[in-house]
Length: 275
Image 1 (cartoon, one colour):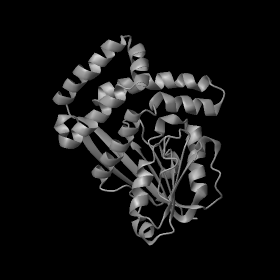
Image 2 (cartoon, one colour):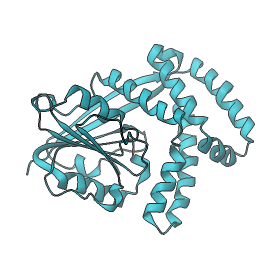
Image 3 (tube, one colour):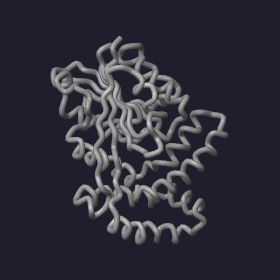
Image 4 (spheres, one colour):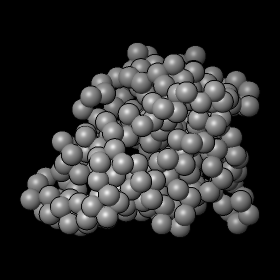
């Protein structure tokens, strides 16, 4: 996060480091290292997932943009969430639509494994290995915030799998932060070339110039940038000590947020499977 220029520089450094993972022969090992790189499963990281979920919910005034609420209320609607993390999105939906069923998969089992609603199931799995479900099993499939985890070819396979397991007439929704240097690929390449595609964007300013929402976003950004994986990697890439990096985040970046309007744009794209 941060302003567009500083964030772009930081992301380029991160992507440069990520490219080293391509040398790992095992796809499972590569994916696990990426997850470890971006998200730790400590309490603070999981708390950020929870807060970010409700931030997005407030900005969009909804948990999804596909026109499925009436069907969720009616019940017997089956939803799949890929990369569900701690399960916040699914748990929120399951409490509101208790007559429908929800499945979340993630390679990192930070989701609830014992105490959870009866209409939610969590499974440790990676979509990069393909989904174990039969064709046309789910009414709604959802994937979010996984843009950097996979190559373009992998996204082609992943989106093909989402289409395969979605019922005709069902919906597929892909969400994530918009990057200025990404237009349609990799995450949206298949969906954007199909018929009946819809897109919505919402933006917010990070920091005090964005009001209460901006301050929440700032706290999330600072917590993420101060997480141990990023402190180690970005300080090394930038050629500064960990203390210098932390000082830059805790002082300089906060001051930058005060003096600028660092806009973050979040995108949802959804499409109906026609056949």
